[in-house]
Every structure is written in C-alpha cells, then in structure tokens.
Image (tube, rainbow over all chains, first blue to last red; front, side, top):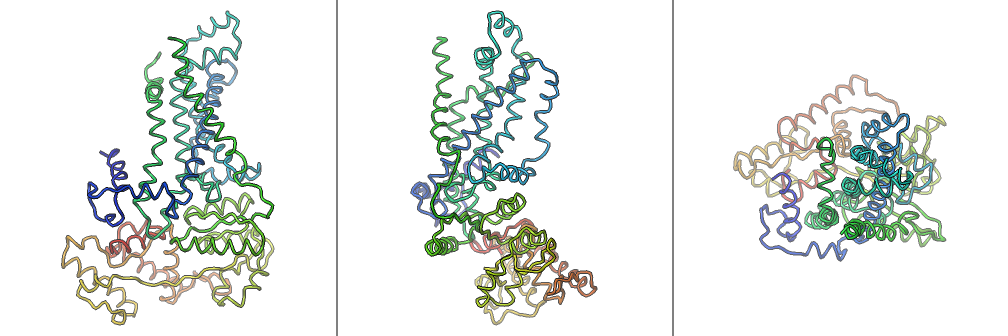
Length: 261
Length: 296
C-alpha cells in the first residue's frame, strides 16, 4: 500500500486534465494524455529543455556506472584475492566514507573541483558519484569474492595464469551476479542525484532531470499534472533497467546471505 | 551452450559500452561550446512566474547584443541557489552575476565582511539616479578585511508586504469583505482574521475545518519569515541594528519589542490560526496554499 499508492497517484495525476486537478478522486474520470504530449513537445516553459535532460542524466549515470564497476571489481579483486599487508584494515574501512553524510561534503567537493578545474562539465558530478558509490561496490564485491574458493586460483596458477588472467578469466565471470546488482545500484544512485547536480551543473541545457523537476517547485502555481507526467517518464529508464537485469539482480542482492554461498 | 551463455551475459555489456561511448564522448568534457564572444555566467533565482524568467532572458539577450557577450543563464530555485552561491564563493570560482533572494541577508553581508566580494561602487554610482535611498542600504556593506564601507552588492529588487484574502470566505463568515471596512489598527486587524476563521468553523466544521485565518510563514528556511519579523518589529517600535550599523538588540526597548514580536508570531500558530505546516513552509508555500483552494 505504502509503496504502490504514491506510484498510482503519480500515474493518475499525470492523466488528469488541468481543470480536474484539484478535484480529489481515486480514479481519473476523464483521462487525457495532454500532459505527456506537452512534456514531449516541450510546450511548457518548465519542460522547454525536456529532451536534453535525459541525455544529461543518462550520460552521467552511465559514466558513473562504468567507473564504479571498474573500481569495484579491481578493488574487490585486490582485497579478496591478493594477500597483502593491511588488506583487512582497508576492506573494513571501505564503508567508512558513509559515516559523513554526502551533503556535508558538498562544499569541500566544490572547492576540490574548482582547484582541479573541471567545473562547467559533467565530470565533477560523475567524480562525486563515483566517490560515494564505489565503497559500497567494493564492500559487496569483496564479500562475494571471498566466498570463491582459493583452490580455483591455485589451479589456474598451476596452469600458468597470472593475476590479469585470474582477474579476467576466473574472478570476473564468477562475480557477475553481484556485479549486475552493483551496476544497477550505481546507475540509480547517480540517476537520482540532486544536490551535486544542482551545485556543479550550470546552464539550462546542462541540468539533469531531477534538477529540472525541482524547478517546478519554485513557482506559485506548479502544474502538478505536468510534473507527474515528467515523473512517470523519468521513472521509465530505471524500470527498464530493473527488468533487463532482474534475474541477475535477485541473485546479486542475496549475495552473502547464506554462509558459504 | 556455454558459448551461448557467455554471449548472453556479454550482450548487455557490449550494448551498454557502445551507448556509453556515444554518450560519454561529447558529454564528459566541455558542456559549453567555445565561442568567440566573452562568456558571461549568470546564476539567477528562478522566478515564481514564467514571465519573470522570460523577462530576465529578454534583458540578457538585449545586453548580449549591446555588449557583444555570450550570456549563460542558469535559473535555480532559491532554496538551492543559496548553497550553490556559497559553495562558489568559498571555492573562489564564482559566476559573473549571481542573484538570489537570500543574498541580501544570508550571503552578501558575510562575504563582504570577509572581503570576498568585489567593490561595485562604480556600478552603483552609474545607477544612483534610478534608486530610492532606502534601496541603496542593502548593498552598502562593511569589509572587515579592508576595514571600509562600500557597495558590495547591487540592489535590483524590492518587496512590499501585503495581505491577500478571499472576499467570498470573509462574506461567508458574516463579515464585511470591503477592504475599507477591515480594521487597520494592529490588534483589531489580526483579531478580524481570527474571527473569520472562528465564524467559518462554527458555521460548517466539516467544510471549513481546515481553513485558517492567517497564512503566515513561520519557518527558518523562508525569507518571508525574516521580512515579516522585520516589519512586525517596526510595529512594536523595535530595531536590531541602527542605520549606522550599530547592534542595538540588547537595549531594553528593543529586547521588549523582540519579545513581543516573537510572542505575537508564536501565538498565531499556537492558537491554531495558521496551518500546522507553516513551520516548514518555503517562500512559495503561503502562495500555494492560498491560491488554489483558499485554505489560508
């Protein structure tokens, strides 16, 4: 009920014509696709750059996903499969970054990005997202990687496999289920990001969908039905992503739930 | 079978990689194209109405033609623009122009004090004939680092507080909605709106149970609360700072006035004459709650 009702209400409100907007009802008496048409045609000033926003959001989310997957797999491989001094301390500190809320780090991050000069591009948002999503990725993949029997590595080593071959031919195929879950997590984390997108992105054509949707709330008379139509469209990519990788996600999410799995 | 399985798990990754390369290529670096004209970066408070943004865009386009510059305007809602400007000032990577409703009391005085804002007295001198004296004071700020007073902000906007009410609701409450008949002395004025609410609730509790007499913003996040407080303080003959910049908040007369203002402010909420969520309202919320259905 708590999960489905907001989604249902979002959907119904997106189909409500403007004249019925403030008539409370659990169903739509006269459904209309006007709000979707207006959004797609960019015919309201609040959605005037609608088509560029998914591009911005998707590109940031994809860049983050790729980077988090790379950092997560390499980091977890080093921690789980290579024995070196301090590996346990490093692995237990991966989640340390979550002690400080990400919003507290926004100003230091802004200063850091200003010093290295990528402000005005998407790179600061991507770097911030990588920073906040990677520790979780390393932690989950490391936990899963530990459950892969070391005998496999030893057998591969006897056959002449070096660390790179071990990584690409043994480790990577074995951690696929949690990797899909981590990739989805990284995508959704950056897809929904608001604060860092507001801080780092400037220019009407460079903002992401969540920031554009936040702009609706500035007005004295927000077109709620239009906002809900944009919300429905905004939720399509994550839903597609979920259904594409659902099988892998389910197996990835229960990773480590049972000892020895 | 093994080969097919391998292909299946590779396929989404290959597709994702291709899509990623297509998106990342043009997207990662340089969201703004390099033009020959000098770029003017403007961060502007998103308007409450479409016409405000359009007006600003029109002004910017005219300015761009006249001065041969390439303006890049970002409209941001004021709750987000304040932190954005503060971040930029701390990082010393600021836009050329930043206008936010929070600037005059949250941002300009502090950063002028720290010596981080440009002295814009020359711009003010040019615009002076167009200003009222009262407006000028907003930008006249003290720079502690250089120990001097100067203009560190350019006032471009002024507000006047007013009350809006639904005539039909006042009439429904059995009172005269004519503006000339509404009491204009302090206590009687506010008592009038309380009476409107009381009468409506008595008349039809089911219909008017959630209609409030006074939609006064009382949250720490809105500018309205501060503006209201300053106006009410005048009504109670108090002041916080003298026109010369001296802090006088501790003088008994002012302490008493502040206490009375706070008591007045809180009494409206405590007595139930303002909606319960006024404590978290943004600047837009009092308008939102008033316009669509006359809840306050």
